[in-house]
Image (tube, rainbow, N blue to C red):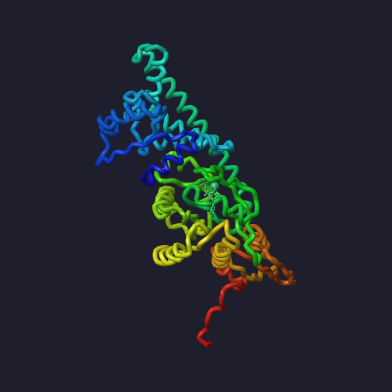
Length: 412
Ligand SMILES: Nc1nc2c(ncn2[C@@H]2O[C@H](COP(=O)(O)OP(=O)(O)OP(=O)(O)O)[C@@H](O)[C@H]2O)c(=O)[nH]1
Ligand SMILES: [Mg+2]
């Protein structure tokens, strides 16, 4: 079975369906009416009867008309990949926000397909005239859906605003967003690094709600890591857009930690799919660290080959494993290096009269120590580069670098 169908089978399994058979047709381009050819559709119908299948899932997206035509032809419920993924998300959504987001995406998927669903309804009700009352009903249904969609959008905006306020309070910390293909091990890594409890499961889309945990990286370095919803090949468009929390976390992160399941034979395609989604949501080019995870599943030779290949083809990266003793040390160390580079520790001397800079240091940076003199206050702070740059431009403030190498002066 090819890798795409294998993934579709895992999705179906996650949604609670049992896969009884598969059928493949290679097409240069889809047929407009049924997506697959007429002969193939006939063959599919026979196969479904033989296997007593009650549901047909297409790996490709069907137009509303194709979906309707296929259901009619097969006499069975037909789903496409998008609908299946939406179904899983609906099953897994826990928080109010996730539920609203999924419902929104589902309604948007359903709206252009209403006719098809209505046709079913009218047929089961004994073939009431499909035109007159049907059309009226359709209009009413659409209006209801539109009202619900606006309502959900409003609710979500509200939740997102509240979250923005909460996040401001933590703005001085180094923020890392874990991103990656579903099942790569994002939650497992965060769980191991933070020592806190998170839901981990060997199924697709275990995580739908973003969760943030403080992680102690030793040597006094700390970061806030946020787990986000997993990506997948051809993630439904509306769904990505509706995961506002994930998008915000990614946009505001100092660093994206892209977790890759290095034990998957198709990890390179998964990397491409993740990069595509990141591009779609405007996060391409964000500072990124790659973590090739699950290396405990590789043989020594495979691990070496991966190292060579990654060094050749990828930017900053580490190998990781949550199953091996010390398997996350390279990751912790790489994160510390990043923090050091982007949130260096500096010493500031501020005139005692400059209360606003002092207040800013407490608000937007992390004050590590403080000595109060008569004329000047001396503090050690770990702060974002941009803030340090702004302080350096103020003549009354003295800034001294502590972390980085002292600049080489021509005098030696
Ligand atoms: N062997 C091995 N298994 C791992 C490792 N990391 C995670 N896993 C397993 O991989 C599966 C998925 O892990 P999760 O942490 O839920 O993956 P995720 O990226 O959060 O997945 P979603 O939330 O679905 O996007 C679980 O069965 C984990 O136990 C690892 O380093 N080695
Ligand atoms: Mg997860």
